[in-house]
Amino acid sequence: MNSDAEHQPDVVPLIQLDRLRKGQAIIRREAEALNFVASHLSASFTNAVSLIETSTGAVIVTGVGKAGLIGRKIVATMASTGTRAFFLHPTEALHGDLGCVADDDVILAISNSGESEEVLKLLPPLRQRNIPVIGLTRNADNSLARECNVVLEIGRHQEAGDLGLAPSVSTTAMLAMGDALGLVLSHAQGFSQLDFARFHPAGSLGRNLCPVRKVMRRGTEVRIASETETVRQILSDLKLPQRRTGAVMLTDDAGALSGIFTDSDLARLFENRREHLIDGPVSEVMTPNPSTTTPDVLLPVAVRLMADRKISELPVIGNHGIPLGLLDITDVLDVAPDPVQPVIGVVGPASRHAESA
Image 1 (cartoon, one colour):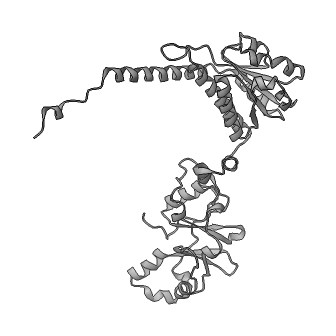
Image 2 (spheres, rainbow, N blue to C red):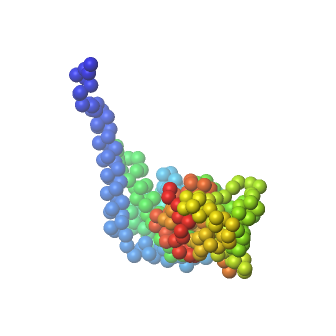
Image 3 (spheres, rainbow, N blue to C red):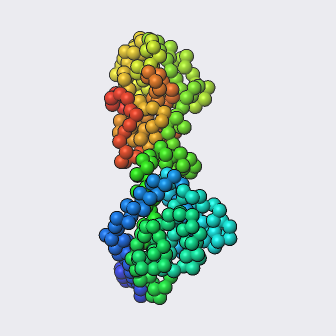
């Protein structure tokens, strides 16, 4: 028997509702600040990009407190996207670490107020060496800005929260400006997916950005036979000592890939009562000119091809169409197909060894 309480709507305690509204207000304030920064981006931004792009050195980022923490994140963004960058703590710099700065480096100094004493003390020795400084600060009317070659202004913002004191809105704006600077530099320098993969070899990100050659089956893990052999010969002779693959790559007289024969092709022979063909040349029942990829194609691109063509095996070929390996769907189930990148490094049309999922 249902009680009346079971039909009562959920009641949100007032204190929880108040906290929810406060959280929303903080996020909205930071979002408004980002819109302001984006709409007020000026030629100074492109000047900063050009200054770093034409430099032969690294970007040395410095800042103290919360600005320093933001600086470390900007360094991480730049370093992972093709721009050499390092963080230099201003206090340590004043006690000898300035020796880490080369004459061809560019300094990115971060201070919301532009009056951080530790950062300002760095400017005279940098000026003596004619090292260019980009200031990331609230406006051009402060001590830091007046000493910089280029000023990136984020605007003056009221910090979020009831007290409006803890760096929040300002640091969000700093981070966004730093990300914009790093990623536009990356684009200007022609940084590619392959470059990104080289800088991220570990973890799930590295797995998703590795080339096909790192995952494909090769050697004794694949089956390769001549297109002139019979199906029976191939299936009886090519017994793999290791993990089994459901496809045989077939080659012509020159050793180039000419077709593929899969477990599904074999099943269809029996389903269509054509089993007598297993004693004829496999060339009569193979899929000619199958879809292929090359070893340097990024794995998500190859996986997307397999998903689009509904195939479980994808031959990997080298020069002159020589088969080098095979990509098996069971080895890449954890890799998400890239939804944006075009399919590159693919040879051959959609083949008739397509299988339903």
